[in-house]
Image (cartoon, rainbow, N blue to C red; front, side, top):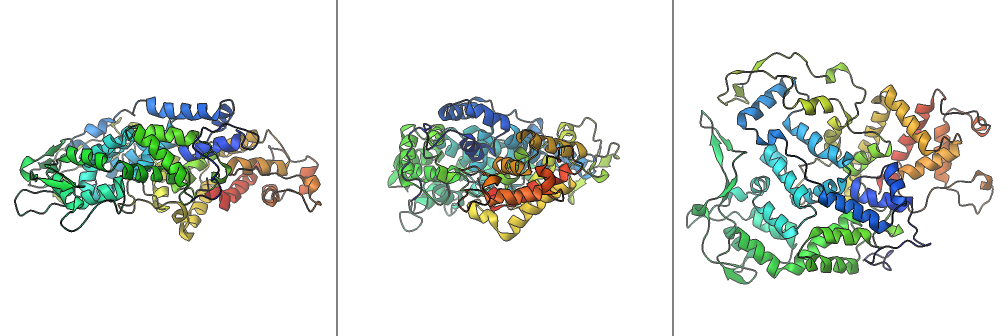
Length: 572
């Protein structure tokens, strides 16, 4: 039970003198739903009511068409092989998986105006978990990702039904191996168990042993779903990425089953219908609680708010969007005690940093020649790959423009090119959560090694990877948000308030330093001293410093490095 916000409700937040509509609350909204706000978004938000801004964000996410399906999603086996060989030969900087990761999700998360949809997809990825390392098929990965986007703000029942026969999920939780082809066959229960425990109703709301076994009976009802396979010249088989999932009636248990006390000859649609008919309150409680933990707080949970969300979820026939809209508009969401209370995930931390410093992830940092694409790499023969004869013996020419070149040329050596590796090494390997339970989040993001990696990675970026133009742009950006002030204390105050989310702004009045009752934030003094560096404070006070000072970039850099290491910057 939350102890600091118990007076708040799901009523629509209306600003007042105690809870004003201000920059802090706009940043709080964007931090939770979109990896931080730009200066333009903050300025626009201040001209709108909170309710109108939330409606604008959600309407954009709901109404914007889904991204176009890339051409490579429809490639056959040979085309994928050619792309892989071109990559290994050095003519493509990224392999197919890296290109997808960079081009289709992470860039959209950071730069799409309707990034709530992509944030919701990341949330559902941590709910309907699959691990690409197990199924290792980029087309399966894309189809799964597309479902996350399509249903992320849609109907949860339809979402659940779509996931049941998703190719990535059929591989990951062994649904494709759930066969009852003979009377003595035992159904594979992996997916059926997680369908209830992790995806819909939670532990304790189903049986998993004895004569009344909901998991076993559900596994029987879900048996027979498969993915077609292909056979290459030497008899080696693989999944046919282009073939649809199909139902093999000969490997389906067609006898009567009893699930949640209901006896019927259930099939996949019957399983989902029965689940949502018999367990609506359990589903609503489980899903609304998970949404609350993601967007409000992981540990401080207000059950009265959960109950209100459940009512909305049930009254709207399991539609997700009304629950999200109600929560984001509520006075509970905008309460000061939730601002800066939740640990940033690696994605929040690193993607948010790029927004904080006004860099585009598609910008190109400073790299050496080893990161360049070979323009005239030799033709290769790709008849054998990994010791397996794939029956392609003609020489492969990686023509220019190759179908992947729009990705590789645009992303070659950009910040986003290394972002997936950065997230992976910091514990958030997109498309590969640690297990079927997903990432635990919150405090688990801040192990000693992960915290040090955060600091070191951004320090390395600022110290070694910015071009001269990017250094100048960063100085000019900080200058602009500081309204060209040349007072190091004022600069430190503005920059701290820009980077750090908290309910009360940093402040410092030097004229009150001798007053023992002053309200000055000592962090401002520390930051001002770091920014000054070797430049004497006396000369700052006399107005001798300027933004054209030869060492201005290093001063800005050291200030930012200091801020991103503060405990407060790890929170949102």
